[in-house]
Length: 119
Image (tube, rainbow, N blue to C red; front, side, top):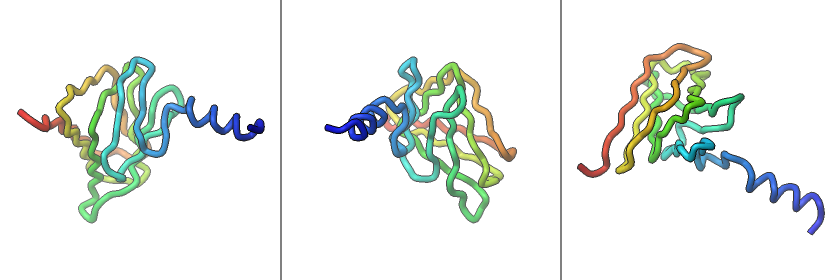
């Protein structure tokens, strides 16, 4: 195994975020998108949820299987300039919101829906 392959393997397995698989805080809290409307990356000091799509109604509707915001908080990047951001969590797990959620780049109305998959 050459040095390039070893380096690539090390980077791949130490990265907190991989190809829309989600984000894990050091506390173990996770954010896991279900659709391709948003992508989560490691930001500067806090994760960043980048909105990628909005509908003709100017709304961005992202769904998640887990949505746990750690103490560092979460930035939601609204470069697409959606007027409404709908964040929907469909899970049997409890969502924990320990940090603040900030909308960056363009203001928007923010709605967080937490639905239990089975009641």
